Image 1 (spheres, one colour):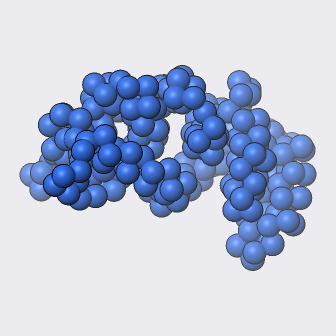
Image 2 (cartoon, one colour):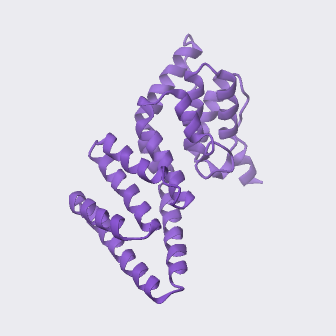
Length: 236
């Protein structure tokens, strides 16, 4: 993102950035974190399968559920979303917590592709609000729910939901941090927003480069010197 042209006020530039962010945030989540999401889901599935392997019946059930989930994903790849939704619904009702959470999150993503944001948010909320699901699934669902509902939420609601994810140690720091920083700006908390953008800008490999670059610019507009050090660290 380039610096604002001369004659452009900081407030106008921030409004322009907010509009751009609102347009592309959904695409950015998958583009920036897609491979991480896949890797996390694969690791979670492997851990779940290993846990269930300790008992014969559990192992058998895990194998069957894994095949069902894989079959549903193949239906998605074959552009048969309605059939995939039906299979995922069966899996969510008949499987354990891990596969149920995965199925609901995947259903939410499919509903977003159909521009059904209300239905998608409900699926994500079902996972995010259930303390019985493993935390990684709940965190991902909360991020997806908040991003989906962002335009309808009050800034304080965004901050409350994502404050635990908008920290440098979180794997979701870049995306969650951007949403929280944008909420701070809407609240008029420029100092808090600038500080958070500065942290995002120096998030290193934990934050995608596109998000870091955007954060550098926004932090500078807000008076925070946030030169991204990550490339220098890699070169050393």
